[in-house]
Image 1 (tube, helix red, strand yellow):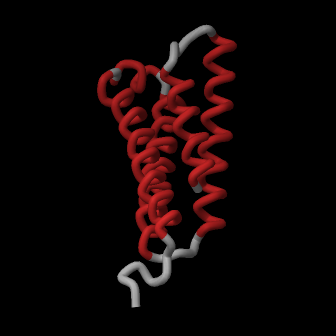
Image 2: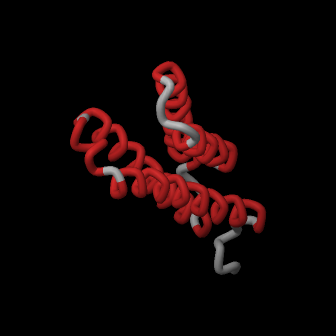
Length: 119
C-alpha cells in the first residue's frame, strides 16, 4: 500500500501548494503585526482582526498539510478558505474606501484567493 494511502500526486501537490500559500499569507500578516506595533496598539479591533487573519491562515496551512497524507476534511478546508478570502476582500474594500494600506491588503487578498482555489 502506498505511503500516502491512495492520495493522488495531484492532490498532494495541491496540498503542498496550499501549505505554501497559507504560510506566505500568515507571514505577511505576522510581519505587519511585528513591524508596526503602534498600529496594532492604536486600534484593538485592528489588532484582533490581524490576529484572526493570522490564525485562519495558520489553520488553513495545517489542514493543507493534513490533506497531503489523509484525504478528507475537504469541506472544512474549503469553508475556511472561503471565509478567509471573503474577509480579505472586505478588508481591501475598506482600505480602498479609506485610501490607506497600499498594496498590503491586496497582496493578502490575492494569497487568500489562491488558497481558496487550491482548497
